[in-house]
Amino acid sequence: MTTELTHYINGAHVKGTSGRFADVYNPATGEVQAKVPLASTAELDQAVEIAAKAQPAWAATNPQRRARVMMAFVGLLNRDMDKLAEALSREHGKTLPDAKGDVQRGLEVVEYCIGAPELLKGEYTDGAGPGIDIYSMRQALGVTAGITPFNFPAMIPMWMFAPAIACGNAFILKPSERDPSVPLMLAELLEEAGLPAGIIQVVNGDKESVDAILDNEVIQSVGFVGSTPIAEYIYGRGCSNGKRVQCFGGAKNHMIIMPDADMGLAADALVGAGYGAAGERCMAISVAVPVGEETADRLIEELIPRIDKLRVGPYTAEGDVDYGPVVTAAAKENILRMVEGGVEAGAELVVDGRNFNLQGYEDGFFVGPHLFDRVTPDMEIYQKEIFGPVLSCVRAGSYEEALGLAMDHEMGNGTAIFTRDGDAARNFASRVNVGMIGVNVPIPVPLAYHTFGGWKKSAFGDLNQHGPDAFKFYTRTKTVTSRWPSGIKEGGEFNFKAMD
Ligand code: NAD
Image 1 (spheres, rainbow, N blue to C red):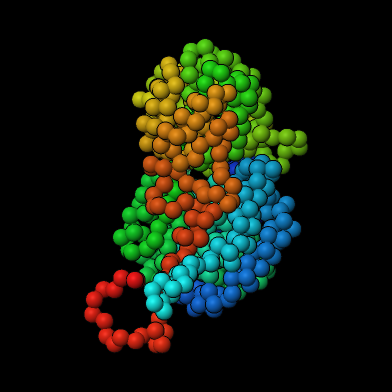
Image 2: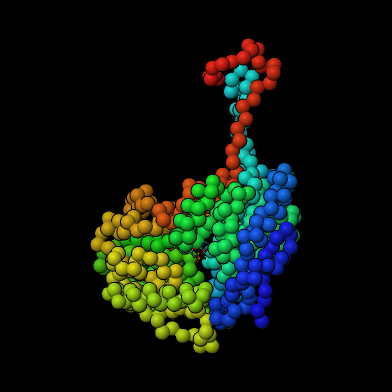
């Protein structure tokens, strides 16, 4: 049965009125399980109007009270963890433990936001001049918005709306149209936690609602996470409309394996980081760079049996499943097209998942694991993000060559080095032009109290997500210089005065 999903506006589920819908699939079976309404510009504008009316009272609510809503929200996320994970797996396809991780890594940012009263404290200079004090405060922006990708439907919305709301803003969330149910559930839970109506609203949609966000004059800031071409587009249009914008794009994360690395550990790490979530992670490792022919041979030898043992299946399967289907039939087609391209370009397909078939789930969007060896930088499979269970091995002759590969790639989200040599690790972390580095850690996603963001074509804007940067992104600084009448003793002043 197909469910008709809604928007979440002014504290209630609201049916779409545009007459346009997108199909939401169960990627494991290939069936359409819901239809999500695609908002018109008018629907988006109406939600913004409601948010603008609700926001001043929320900003005037003291930060401790706002933090208490976050605290209650954490409790409700934990209460409903299983329900959220099941809804997430059903629309996204990832395994249940992975879906819980998706909720958990968002929840940790909510926990961080409970510190809003501390994080929002301003600065004060007592006696900056005779009788003069200067203080600065961080104030909410007003109505803010976020546009999120399909691959982390719980975590990434929470990375945006938790700090935005804790800072006193209203937030309009435009989630991915592929898995919109969890974002709707999160909005409901936030209100159950005590958030007033109109402060979090979910407007489902596609390009029309994104453009409506970018052109709406009331919206002060836009956060985006998704593919690089859309990130670039949103950054350009949002900035030219005078908004504060941060956009996080695609990735092609390299893992350097030095000859002295523990090869078993490196192979275990690569299998998890390359094939977990079917490779649909912006921090997935998609390129392995062993240094030296012997290292490469040993690594491939360790990888093949591990990849052969991977269990691919639906989240409902009994027993352990390592990864599930990819999100749509189109995503599957694109991955297999790129694999064919790699074979034609001369890369060695040492694990071939092209004929993978899961009995009973023939219409699901499952893709078998693939491993390419002897990939070279001129190949499309090296240059472009595949976003599927495909790992490419590029053999480097030296450490400098391996470092150069990571540095010359246009993407710069994450990277890792596996070595026992502290000197090499330190050199790598210091020199590589990538935003997040792992040393013997394959997926170095920083925790909530640090910040997350890539370099080069993986991010546009100057502040990272979550951690202290989020509190800067969602507030603006106001600085007051004050002197009381008793301090004015000498009549008018005509020169720009030094604080002597
Ligand atoms: P996507 O770019 O297709 O979609 C992201 C959002 O943009 C969705 O809400 C979608 O509705 C909207 N959108 C799509 N096309 C649009 C258009 N033409 N105009 C305006 N809006 C449009 O990305 P996706 O497939 O949902 O997610 C996967 C991508 O996200 C990968 O490239 C992945 O690397 C990236 N990602 C990056 C990070 C990061 O932090 N850097 C994190 C997660 C995912």
